[in-house]
Length: 117
Length: 113
Figure 1: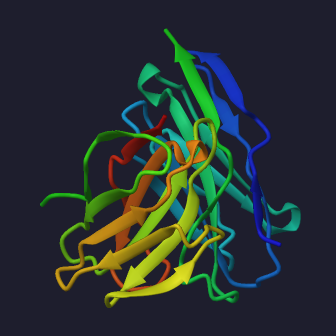
Figure 2: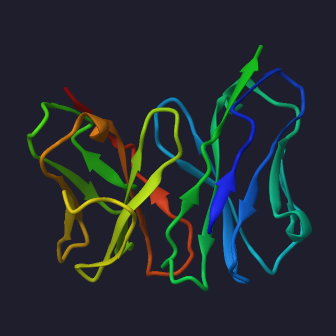
């Protein structure tokens, strides 16, 4: 069965610290997509990244980086030199291609990140 | 270019009532999905509309129904409201039915008393 687990419910860091948000997924499909979304207090989900199952290259975008490892079914997200504006709930999500999900997302429960000045 | 818009922002209903939530997708997007997000949880997929038809449905009862109009906008209807239906309802749109990024609206906060 498909599932996304974000074991860290809440993380609190001080500004400029690095922080890693963990995501572990379960799927039987060989073709799937993984996503990270950010949900600030306003409530609107903001897309951060999409990876497909055939691309295990790590990606860096500014202060954000993602580590995708199929061997451990993990897709972790690191924020370098965190800032107060990074405070939000972060969701990891899975979309299965083989199972006919039509691109719909299975979300984890989210990790609430608080960055203190 | 407007993003995904939803109305109303907030809604308070009592048990047993019916509610209709509305969503306008981002320009150029023809697929609309609805998600329910209970407090402290991740969003859960309700259903998806494409070409005015429900294409896929999550694990939600028939009390949840929807519609998509020719201009791609969509409605979510919930009948016989229960206290447990209190949640943030999110609409997402994307072009086509593939695995493109989904753009989310700000949501409608439904409170059932």
